[in-house]
Length: 113
Length: 117
Image (cartoon, rainbow over all chains, first blue to last red; front, side):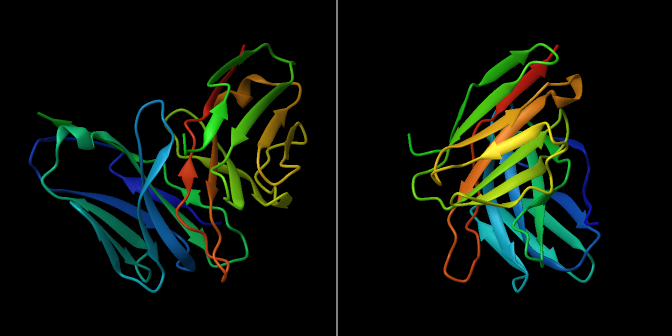
């Protein structure tokens, strides 16, 4: 059974710091991996989608990498801002016929002004 | 608006009552998902529709949970005889499906927070 783990569970950093969020998965037969952002009381917003054939994706100050062999993905946030404060979730889709995503529990990020 | 719309935003039900949660996906989105999110946890998959066909319902926790999407657009998640453990946020998401069966990134609604007392 695929399990997705995110470390750390919570993180507090001063504004301007570069930071890395970690996601690990137990089953390397992963089709793609997505990173989402969730603000309190809101749904999830897709940030980056990495296909299994790719190693990384970039959008603005965000960079996500995928290493299937080690079962890891990282989300790098450059020059963090208070507006980046949110919960960040990673989710993987397996290489099977199912379309479902398996989510980690998230990393709650606070960027202090 | 152009996003996924869910109603009601909040629902309080007494234990044993039936509830119905509605999801209006983005127009033209073939794929529709329901997820359940407990406090402090990531979403857990419940069920998946492709148009009106329910292709995967492996995540529904019991036969008290039922979902439908009769015309391939609006979907309803129904929970019968609600229990306290059903308290959670229920999220709906929709996406496009390309010609080779790949999903585009999911668009989530803001969810329905269900509290069973």
